Image 1 (cartoon, rainbow, N blue to C red):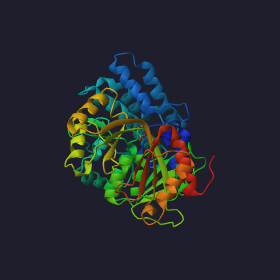
Image 2: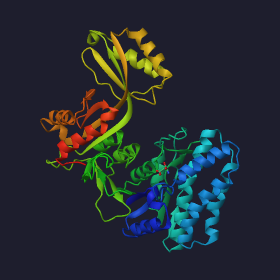
Image 3: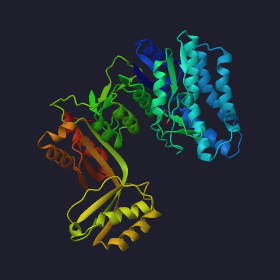
Image 4: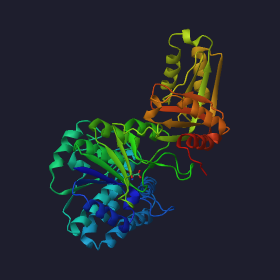
Length: 454
Ligand code: ASP
């Protein structure tokens, strides 16, 4: 069997849902369907999840929610009307949205999660009702009925391992399963959502539990591209990626597939295929454990992301001091700051951190604490720093990859601030100034994909 997940833009209107229904009908192995909330129909549109966040905030402020309730219901109603769904079938969706403020929630965070989850929950109910109305027997499988248990961490839930055995029981279902993505239940029975875009995670969890032969992830692009199309015009489509390559790429800006969704897929050994609901015959991109090697393409993709800073620390004979890095990291831990990676030299290290972690209020305190602990010869914070990465299993087997990369960045007129080949054999990471990000990516793309870019 296959698990198919459809993202918000695939379910944004009755027209889009018709395409989804055709895709489900097109392959009898698609027995479990995970759905997002209705997404954007056009560029300036709003996702139902964002409308629900507004709704939660209106309720928390004790303001009048009527306008936002109507805006949300109108999205579902348009889809129901497109399929002539009888009014009585729509009633439970109406009631769920209207009654969200009437429940007791342990805190504002749990309230927010219950509101957000209502986006996928009602879409799954609606889609199951529409499919039954069209004569396709379907069962709305709520995460509560399924036993999808998650940690009590609102907005950032993690699946609890005991869920898998409970979910597996539903593999035998004779009826098509329609499952809402994005949330599960805590052991206390509270709704908790995954991080944003988390319906991908639900799909991967069910694919693992059902030992699916494939997890199909339907979205609105024909493939995962070798570079960001906003930076490089018409980048090459990637036919195949390993899990490791996808993990590295999604770390730095590749957002087509949620990086946390890779974990259940890897654990269960389930391959993932990213496909376009609007062009379902196109092959899309396959993500799997084994490399399908193309000697002409040692690099699979080029990723980049901004919003980093580096704490540069230099101390003569650093290499001889025991516990030097430990002391610095302990200070970061005390302030609750997570770091990204640490390129190092003999006498110096740079600790790369997301700017949002080391806020302007924390920065002087942290620097003072580090100075007191290790008395560095030099310590500086380099702001507005971007990471640019080349990713590919071929990096380990090809000579001259680093030379080619640094050369192309130099030719693009960009100076490299940090360089990290680290322990990962599948990526090389360059730190550059934020203003140089696009030029560095374009230079690398030209060198590795041998194409002129716009
Ligand atoms: N609807 C949720 C979001 O917008 C989850 C998802 O679509 O995957 O983040």
